[in-house]
Amino acid sequence: MREAAVTDSPSRRPGFRRPAMLIHHVLDHGTLKVRIQGELDITNRAAAALRIEALVAAHRPARVLLELPTGDPTPATLSALARTQRMCRSLGVAFTVSDTHPPSQPIRTAGPAHRLEAGARHDH
Image 1: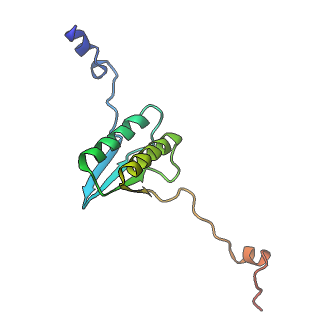
Image 2: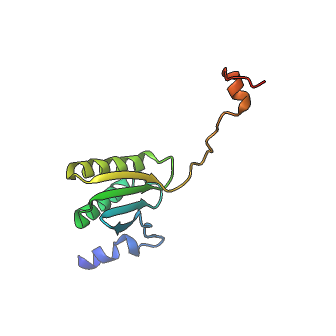
């Protein structure tokens, strides 16, 4: 029975790849900085959220800084974020979210022509 469990282990199956690390963390002066390494999906969001909860329980930080992998997170990433926020709130731990990447779309500002069309003052 014990041998079957060892040989049935997913890591021993042909073609099996170990999952990449979901998160990276650093404890810096009472702040637990957690970076989600890539967008989460339905298969790994619970694992990431549980890992963050375990880190908070182990380190008891004053604040948690969660760094998202993109400026446009997936629903599963947002789910893990919400779970972490609820947990921090219930423990009285400050919680902050940060985006580690610049926006994929540049922010457009209205040029002079658009300001004139919108009723801006004409310079004579």
